[in-house]
Length: 476
Image 1 (spheres, rainbow, N blue to C red):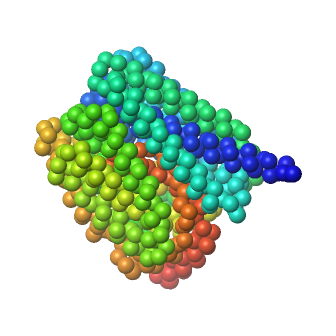
Image 2 (cartoon, helix red, strand yellow):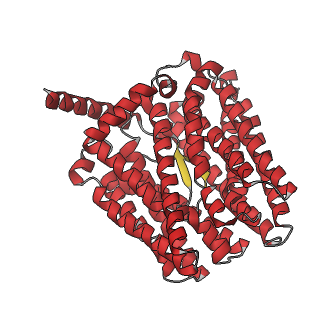
Image 3 (spheres, rainbow, N blue to C red):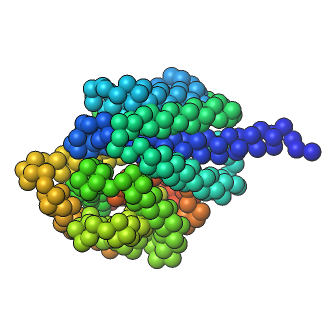
């Protein structure tokens, strides 16, 4: 006979799995296709590119309010469900715009900004909440299995959307098909919110407050810390500079691939769906193998493999415009991005104590989003100077690869990397949440931080103490 606590645990696990699948279905059916929707509505390549980047930055700024709101809400469930409902509402607004047919483009940006603000605000709170719902003994295995269900949901959503759009491509009914996709995405997110309601609550007031509300309550002090790191960056500061520089370089071309593929290259919806799905599958298949490389050879080697691997990706589009060739490029790109992002996770988040993860993740999301928008603007400026001819687009892709190559000079050397306490962290099985799918990055993944071993966090605390002692010695 199963105890009451055992039954509750089973219900929680089932609801957590269903929530992840439904959320991922929304990503595949809805968010992925917003830039394509902007193109189909006739707003042009620049709007389509910027809607894939600017709302992420605006959403990252708004999510700075999340810790304070969470603390006032007093419950993780109440906060996360509300954010999920808001995200569903943004999808519903997109559905209404698609049905209306004629609308100002700023409404799309508004809906996308609300979507990202709600989504980014939910992530850190959900990461903390799930630690209280899933016992430590089964957490890694369960959340890794949940990740597979999430990836299946994204793939199913992508393929379904591609097949539906294939019947209404480039016709007057095109935006009507998008309305159906966004409506399905809304329903999927509402189902996800319903499954969140079914999970056991956890009160935020009973958990440590300082890092829950750190961004909102101690932002001034954190800005001072950032300024201090810029003046005397050290190995960790140089590593963050490298990450942000690489983000700028990548997004000189990244947001412009969808307009290029659909508006300039004139791919069909099915061909477009095939390319982005191949990139996504390549990345997902690479993640576990990348974890094996990190465990056996260290995160430093994995970082070099991923960093070098993503350098030529955008320039490979100059070689041929064959769909077969581009499909191969997408798979290889996904693999390299899987290596790169896992290595970044190990170097950056693996050495942060659990008590500081929420605040650090919030601030890093903001810096990362700002770099994304800066790169997008640089790509757009190049197109404005060179013109919008076919060759100009290819030059933007080549420029992105050249700048990525230059960013390798900022990559910390062996000494800096090897000093990281997570050089050989055991991170198997790997768990993540897919929050978006992008043509040249495979997907945007957010790690489930509770799966990071406590041993790596402990080594991170020891490393922090050593670095603090070294800085005090230098000051003396």
